[in-house]
Structure formats: C-alpha cells, structure tokens
Length: 382
Ligand code: SF4
Image (cartoon, rainbow, N blue to C red; front, side, top):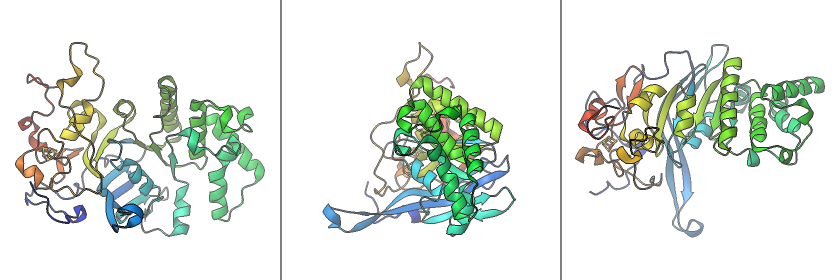
C-alpha cells in the first residue's frame, strides 16, 4: 500500500462519510457526569525539528499531540495511558502551559465559576491560574535542586507566584505553610533544613508532592509519579495520593504506562497512541471490555492472576511505536493492529460513542465481536 504524499495528519479527514463516525468526540462524552474542571478541545502540539546533521536537510513539523479532546471532571482521577513516545507527557505539559499548544483550546473552569482558555491566556492571566494546576514529576532525584534545603524547595513555587502577583508573603506565614504541607505529606518538621540527598526515594517523592501542593492546587498532573519508586514505596505513595485527594478535594490527571497503577487509582482512563486519544472509558469498563484493539493489546501485558490461563492467550502488540514524524494514512494503529482490515489503511476512524461514557476511535468499535475483541480465544467473554 502506498502513502499519500505529504499527508498532514492535522488535515486528515474521515474518508468514509459515515454519520455514525463523528470527527470530534460527542458533547455528551466521558467526564460530563461531574462539573468540568478542565476541557481540552481539539488540542494539537507541533514541534519543528531539524533533519540531517546540523539541520542540513531542513526542518520538518512533528505533531506530538493530535486533536485531543478530553474533559476532566472536578474531583475525579483520569488516567492517561500509552507506551513511551505516545505524547502523554507533552499533553500534560500543554495543560500546564509549559508548551503552548499549536491548535485547540484548554478551558479551565475557575473556582469563581469563570471559564478561561489557557491557550489564549497572556502571562499575567497564566500566573493567576498556575497555582491551581501543578505537576508531580517522575524522578524525585532529578526534579529536586540538590543545593536547596527541603523547605526552600517546597516554598519556591509559592514565593515565585507571590512575587509575580506583587503580593509579598510574610516569612513566618511562609514557614508555617511549608511545615503544614510537610506534615500533610507525612514528612516531619525537623527534616525541613535537610538537603534532598539525606532522604530516601519515597521521602524525596513526598517532597515533590509537597512542592506541588504548597500552592493549594485544584488539579495535579502526576507524570509517572510512582514509576521510579520501589514496589513497596510505590503503594505508600499511591495511598498518600488517594488520602490527599479525599482530604483536599483534588483532581488528578495520572499519566502512566503502568496499567496496574491506573486500574488501582483511576475513575476514568484515556488511552493515547502516537498523539491521538484512541479510547476513553470508565476504568472498570475499560479493563473489563476494551473497545479498541490498542487498549486490548496494552491489557495483554498485564499480569494474569489465573494460573490456568497463559498470559499470551490475548492478542498482544508487536513492533515499535512509530516515530511521530511518520505520516500514517488511515488509522494510526493499523500498521500494528492484529485486526486491521483494508479500509483501516485509508480511512481515518471517527470518534464512536459506544456507551454513555465510552468513546473509541476504531471503525469496528460498535461491533467488536467481528474482530474477536473482548473475548478470550475459545469464545468466552472476558
Ligand atoms: Fe485496528 Fe482498524 Fe480498528 Fe484501527 S480501525 S484499531 S486498524 S481494526
């Protein structure tokens, strides 16, 4: 099969004008059973990269995030899963406005009931809302400045924001706030003047969590927040995140490639592949009956507790995730999809709403039995 020349995925259209295949997610899609906190509408993120040695072959556009629409409700935990290189972290950084999306809008519903498009916000407006949306990073070792004490590390975002807003924070008030936040995450006040190297990996991640919480955020983007931790420490930190959510009414966007963590923690899950959201569903529904072959393949990698069932019973995934610079006609997953049909190589799947809270970008999402998805070999339903 031959690829159309210079196909720009931003401009791809659903080739088969089937009215059942919406090109954008339905307005009644996932996440709208709660008041929305953040709405991503057709968000795309392009990067210009150099080709050849020292750019001798010019520059080209790479689309790392493609037309992503996702609503995050107040107080819920949304999981964002996918292999490395699927665009999860780039999307998280767009939400924080560390990257300015190339297209689309990110509507933030403020505590005052206003709606603000973070993509169009200027520096002053962004500063006002930055305290509300914070991030916990993957590697506590590299994300903490080794030259600062823990109290300085935790206080830094608050100081920066206060200075930016021309509102000085009294020294005593700042210290109180740091100590209060340290206690909140299970650190002792007498650890405040120590440096990061004096802490264990789990404690360092607690410092990272305190740094995120010092501004009293509403949404926390957790980017592989427990991936670098030992298994025993990981469950402690996950429990802490859950406790903090209940206590503070936090909303989480939990970015991870670890499906076991996502299953444990999340209310809803969005699955990302080469920059596109290919499936969204409540966590229980998604793990019970995936509606996209990529999700099915990811689930095949989960450990199976049944000793009589082989792990490779389910269709797995082969090959590598493609380079985002690669122009893939049709369904982005078709080169690796074990269920691909002829039309998959030419027609871009629309957003199929397969239930009140489920959306899948597969041509066959409404009749997955045709492909044998969601059934174990032998015909039994999972
Ligand atoms: Fe696979 Fe085709 Fe569905 Fe894409 S549209 S996931 S290639 S079956």
